[in-house]
Length: 145
Image (cartoon, rainbow, N blue to C red; front, side, top):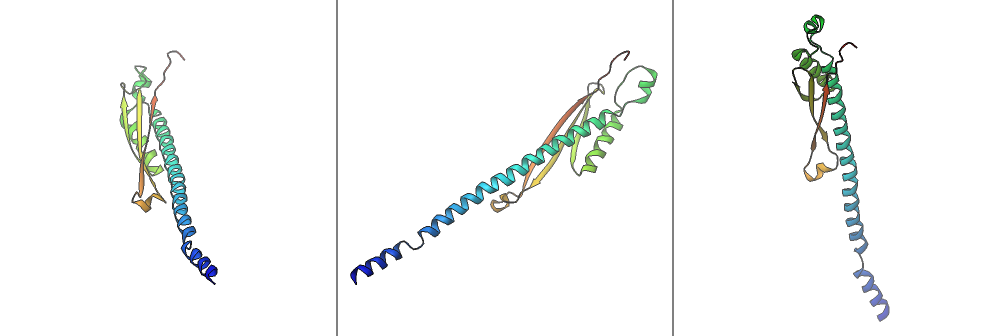
């Protein structure tokens, strides 16, 4: 009788110890899963921003100044047309960005600002992750060719 009571007391003392283990393990697994999902999503959003910046810079680079090109005085970018083309491309993609034209119309730099909406990080108050992508295009000309 005494042995059965001791066995019952030991069993009660261990009640809940596995529940605590599973609770801690579950929280840990959710944190790792959140890091994987949200971290991967942020990397994808960053890659997308970089790709959009590259394409917008290429689009801007196609906007030559026709007056100078026809006269043969220079092959440069029409700054207003290049800015408009790049901004139109970014607007069609649903992102915002900055366009800079330097080197007397020979270089276009596009910077894209986007964000990734998190899934798991929302639980700790981080609803979005801001990402930026940047690309530069140089106008290449070759005399006589």
